[in-house]
Image 1 (cartoon, rainbow, N blue to C red):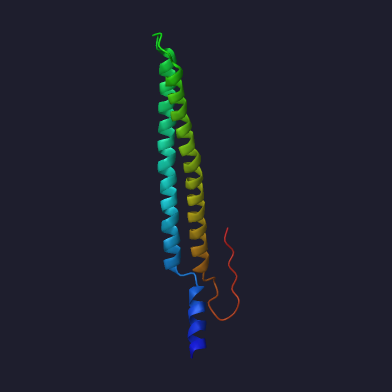
Image 2: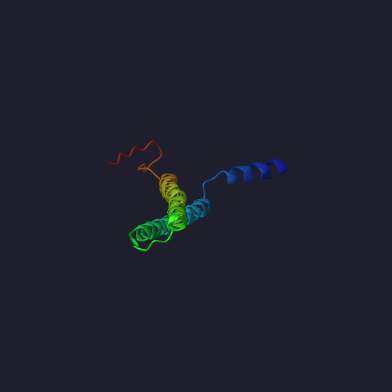
Length: 124
């Protein structure tokens, strides 16, 4: 009896249920959202750093520009860093989401067999 229950539980754990797909799909959508947010913030930060850099060199006063230039360069590098993290998250999340949807479609695939036997279905 114990062996039978163990077998049933182990077989049931290996099925691809819609709940597992739903959890994985939600996780990948969160990854995609995080990537989108990081990429957008990184792009805005890079743009702000460029404006700061441009404004420092177009000011006519004789102040030392070294510290201001360093600050603007660090802002631009921070923006590039955020984009370097955000873009892969966005792409990986989108790719995994697409693969999960394809796999879920294939599992629910019934074929075209209407009687017992082998069915063949060709889609273009």
